[in-house]
Amino acid sequence: MATEAVTQAPTPRRERLDPSVFRLPVERIREGYYSDVYFNRTVDVLNADTRHPHVLMQVFQKNEAVVGGMDEAIAIVKLCSEDFSQLRVHALYDGDEAAPWETTMTIEGDYSLFARLETVYLGVLSRRTKVATNVHRVVEAANGKQIMFFPARHDHHLVQTGDGYAAHVSGAIGVSTDAQASWWGGQGIGTVPHGLIAAYDGDTVLAARKYAEYMEPTANLVVLVDWENERQSATLPPGSTGPRPRGLRARQDRRQRRLQRRQDRALRARAGSGRCLRRRQRLFPGDV
Image: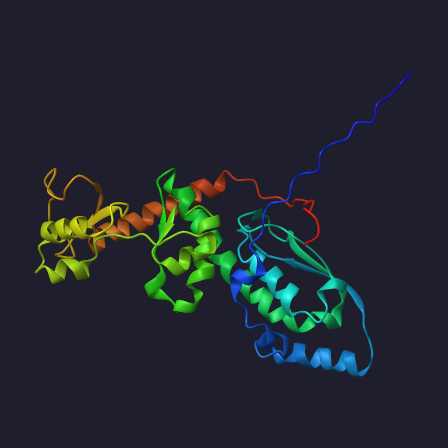
């Protein structure tokens, strides 16, 4: 009786961002400038005592999350460890969902080769995962409506690139600055801002017309119609801004915003109640 060997094609690896994308200050990270000092001292002690323990480092999170910053964390280990060829790394991908306490990354090898990097790669993972998780929750609550990520004015400009990418992998369809879109080769998007309307003496229609006239045809025309701040104060008759209006944005008054926040919390609670939270065993996609 003849038998045939059945072979299963391996799951193809997904592409990761190249380490050069992150423009890491490699020498400063290697020397421990950004590390908690106790990790630097740990390396000093191990090297002085010629002790090189072989360890398996596991990175995890306490809550349900969407992974962000993983490619950046891997780049830190690749470029800034003492000898990456002596280490073995497995990891999930940016945008993957992770259950509470699930291992999302492992680093195996001589601890002294990467001990001083823990502060840096955990910091990257913590921040980007927070952004990715929060954006994912908003995307889910929006129930099919497109979500744009416009936080740039609320944080330091140096976090834009990584935060924008974290929002991108978790479902946002656009970001507001070119820096936020740079890691995937995109561009910033936006609206007709209040500043331009003010420059045209509060004439929303005129500002929108000028925006449509002078901006490139690919720029979406989304107009703010709340110049008076607490109520819709402008209307745009059909055709008033030319052939390419895309949308209007109106700001709510304080009472409306409080009501909307209560409704949003109730929506998120209902969405969360139907989800199954469980420990999952993950087969990592291979070495990196």
